[in-house]
Length: 316
Image (tube, rainbow, N blue to C red; front, side, top):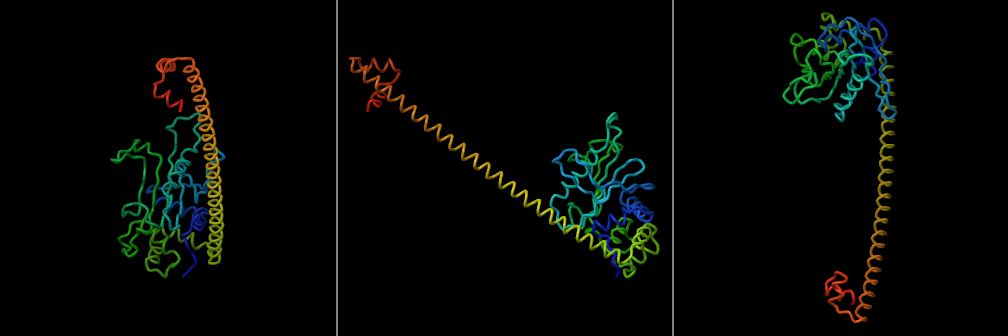
């Protein structure tokens, strides 16, 4: 049993993203298999998106690559056992990547294809397929743009849907590669891995890259991955705590504002009641003077546009 492990994003990026021939050959093999297109040339790019606005999230992609036709692909190895926000997160990555293209002085027709290729180890999509491709379509499956103009795609690889007991000769290239990913650590101790290493040209390219890393090298990668994710989890918890504190402060502020509004409303109502009482007292005095001067109740009623009963109530 060897220490090789492709099932973490740190090792995934190291194996396929390093600046060496073996890594580049392995990367081309991976992309050829899962995008089902021949990839002859690929360049690894800076995987940190540049923020356009100060308050935008600044995601760090696992592996960002570009083909010679300027197609951009974000490869993600997502192994956290949670489905929370994953579709939203990768939709955001796709939108940000596609929108980052420089179009000044160009036509929209010059936009290049953008693909997010995600490997999951959870069941996320509501079907039994291991590989799914999502594009812009309506509820009946009608594409929003022509097939030749469809330049935004999310490709999901649900490794949990692989039938690991399926005979090797019945597996397609995608299934073989996922089986290799899942069992790479076993090496030739696994009979299927042994056969693939001996006979499958695509797997051989990836195996050649895996073999360039020593056992101690793999242990260091795994340890670095553990430390990185512990640090990321601490940062995430800190951010969550800050968000909770911010929300609490906002709630207290809103409560205080509501209290002030309530106090102001009560003050206005109290002043209104005082004004109404004052006016009633003045009207009462006026009625008393009119009656004492010999004016009839009927005359006073007509003069003040009030019923006789209302006038009598005021005099009580």
